[in-house]
Amino acid sequence: MTFKDLGVIEPILKSLEIAGYTHPTPIQQQSIPILLDRKDLLGCAQTGTGKTAAFTIPIIQHLYNSIQELKGKRKIKALIVTPTRELAIQINDNITAYGQFTNIKNTVIFGGVKQGGQTDSLRRGTDILVATPGRLLDLISQGFISLKDVKYFVLDEADQMLDMGFIHDIKKLIAMLPAKRQSLFFSATMPASIIDLSRNILGNYEKVTIKPKQATAEKVEQAVYFVSKSNKPNLLVHLIEENPDASVLVFSRTKHGADKVVRMLAKSHIKAAAIHGNKSQGARQRALNDFKDGNLHVLIATDIAARGIDIEELQLVINYDLPNIPETYVHRIGRTGRAKASGIALSFCNVEEKEYLRDIQKLINQQIPVIEEHPFLLDDNEEVPLVQKPTKNQRKKNNRKAEHKPKEGETAKKPKRKFYGKKPK
Image (cartoon, rainbow, N blue to C red; front, side, top):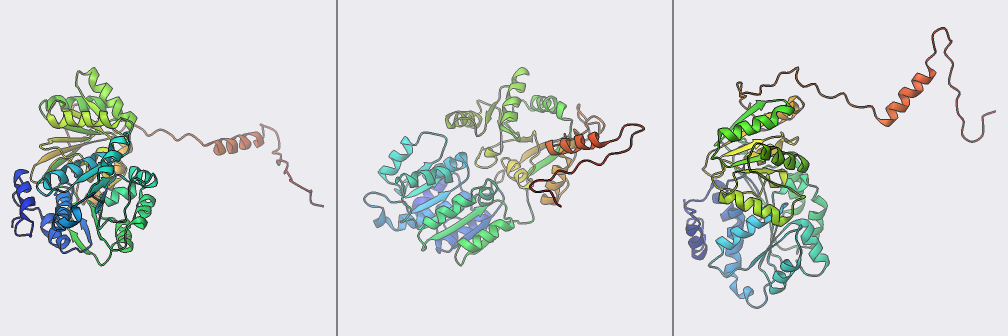
């Protein structure tokens, strides 16, 4: 099957050919005809399978076919909301590529940067707006954006929206949209919360699910190393040195941890950069571009980068810290093995993370192979989880018990009862 067989028009076909797209992926094969028929859709497919093209191509085609409406100052006809800056930028770049022969105008807005350039672009008019929720609501409140002309609404990575606490923002946005519109929800996983939300927001929608029982990309080779927390840095250096020419994306659970890994690698003369929420958008884009261009071989990221980083031929993903949300593991390792490519995903697991590993294996319905031999094997006696410190209330309780405990040879005294207000007669 080809894109032409799906009913895609010639200007877009020309763009897809330049981009090297030959045949549609399964999510594209099933979604594009439904969306060209103007039906609402709930789409679920593994990360890296072409969901962005599945929803942007039909939108571009609808707008191109209503070319009369694109004359004069452009009004926002399509709104695509996504959780992270990186993903917003990537989607906007894809729209530019797919629509280069259609005269469609698109704009991206996100937080973390000054709004001047974005508001200037909005003043000039745009047909398709790609946005993160916070900046979108901010510019709506300032009067720069009106949603009254939106005909196509896309919620991308819907499950992560809920995980990141965007549900109230999403409900505010949906209340501002025209009732008559085409709505699309796309995600890599489909928890019950998304199903419930879709029932309330989508109309009489179609549902497309690709390989629901296959939680992780089948061409990603997975393995886990049991290693102490103190030896994780040594193991990371060892693996990077064993793969000197590989592009390596390393995931840390925290921003502080990501910066710490960068400093640690620098001591071993390994150049790396970190991207996370505390970095400026400029710094994040420079690091990401250097990584994509091959000028930087090691990139350390928090989960803000788990989705939205589309890097060709990314050979190796390393979970320096296992995620405490099992779905996050799926999105992390989905950065490699994209489309028809293969890749490797390695995870470090210390004693305290074994429960996370069990949850991940339960979600993906498979046992991740364990690397039995490596220089930094974990001795189960090596790490004992720290005893939790008593809380302030517990300490007070313990102190009261100690005060009332009788000394040797004494009779235990009952503590005097305190009364507040009038004493009973």
